[in-house]
Amino acid sequence: MWMAHDFIQPKSSSGKRREDLGAEYFNVLLSRSFFQAVKKGSKTQCSMHDLIHDLAVSVAADVHGTVRRVSTTDIHLKKFGNHAKLRSFVLQGPLSPSTSCLQNEIGNASSLRVLDLSCFDLTELPKTIGNLKHLRYLSLSGTLQRLPESICMLRRLESLHVVGKCSLDKLPDGTSMLVNLRHLNIATRYLAEVSSIGQLVNLQGSLEFHVKKLKGHNLGELGSINSLHGQLKIKGLNNVARKEDACKASLSNKCNLRVLSLEWASASRTLGLCADSEILENLQPHSSIKEIIINRYLGAKSPSWLELPLLKELQSLHLTNCRSLDLLPPLGLLPSLKLLHMKELCTVSRIGYEFYGTNEVAFPALRVLVLDDFPSLLEWSEELRSKSFPCLKKLKVVHCPNLSELPMFPCSVTELTMENTRLIPYLRLGPFSSSKLESLTLDIRTNNLLGMELFHQHHLESVVVLNMEASKQFLMAEGMRFFTSLQRLQLNHSDLTDQNLSSLIQALPSLPSLELMNLPNIVSLLVPAETNLCTTLTELKICSCPLLSSLASLDSFISLKCLVIEKCPKITAASFPKSFSTLRSLKLLSVSYCTELQSLPSGGLPTSLEALHLFGCHPKLTEVYQNNNQYFFGASLYCT
Picture 1 (cartoon, rainbow, N blue to C red):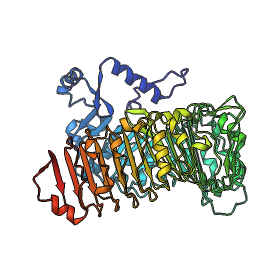
Picture 2 (tube, one colour):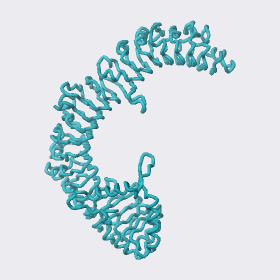
Picture 3 (cartoon, rainbow, N blue to C red):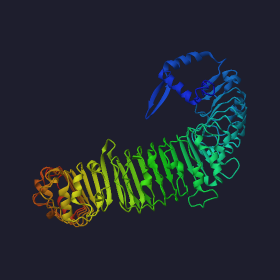
């Protein structure tokens, strides 16, 4: 709006855009309390200071005869004097549509430079809008279903905004006649249908462009649009007939562009007259680009501009559905790259030294790396000559069914996901909580992980929760000594035997919580008396162990406070140790769906017990205890 009223006049020698200079003006006014910042949730908005507002009200007390700029809830312009002299008219809403008022009055406000009807729920704009020859700023409601062709007569228009979800079918056919347009705030899919958009050389925001085999839709239309500051999305690159057409797009001249998206049609298509590789080679962006997205590219090699450290400011790179690309470029050379997402690269069989580049430090800034759906990938080898991924925090490797070799995970990684790989069927490593980022949770399903030396010792020492589903070959006692911070261990779906479990428990560091779940081979719980767990274990849960019949070592856990036993059909009163009552720290005992349990241990229960829960066990147990008093040996009794 300031620009529309010529309030912003940059010096010709400064080289600044009016938008940038206006932002400086705003910040100066904010610093001088003309505006004041107001925090609303996660956002900060600005409002007029109360003193400035009072001053404005005072000045505006009697200006009807000379008013030039109006912000009102009244649609009738004639109430403000000679509306032919109005320069700015902003409607405050919401207002019900009444096109007759607009039809009669707006067309006569021929001096308007700013018109804001975004709070006015119109479905159609009057044709007389084309009479506003001086209009530079126009804001409309998303309820509009069509724009009249007469709007294309507004040759001085610089800003056109559609507020809210847009209901337009399309933009007018003559949109490209708005040659002074700088800001077109509308969903970019509408711009994609504009023919000869190359005439809008002053566009500043984002643009979506569909290459078609029609006049006014070839890549050359982009050649003169060099002031874009947002995203440029180019689709239909399979319709480019010659590599010279790609050159005419002049992407390297768009120095303020932040995001470049390049997209071909279906990856199952046949190559046209001009190979994808020739087209992409000639779509080199400016070195200041921040994000690149390449989708459905069928070239076998990457463009040269991606193989050299030219893109020094590139922060994000997405390579998706590039099914013929068989060798990854040396992306480790990109000094500012923070996110690398690669998906559906179907012919890459190996990731090796070429991926890292030749610098001393590879991927110096990368924080997120995703490899998704690499069906042919067999190995990812470590580059020994370089220091790799010093800043990497998140690594995701999924749907790589033939991957059998991996480098050691970078020490800096705190979030790790692996799924559907030959080497590791399932693995998740992540922060224990948002407040304890240095503490990790590890959830793994594999046959031999620690033996492959994929983890740094730092990772293992930071794990506080460990959920493991693995064979007895993996669950070796010597591998557990590294988990020095472990607070909870869950063993699930494992073929451990009694002896394996005993050795594993004996090797565990001090551990407060242990869960044994779905262990089909376990018959008895055997724990040597000198084990660390005897003094540190406070919670023990045993679930779905169909052969478990002996809990003879339970009395070794002298600090045990909570004992839960579920779905262990061979558990009886004789399964408990005779000295079970000596567990003087036990507060909760819960036994459920142990169908052979007809009575409680003959030696009695600990006197410290505060709650006894019995569910779904033998009917005799229910008969004996369900009619007892609420308190059983001082404990609350729940029996069904």
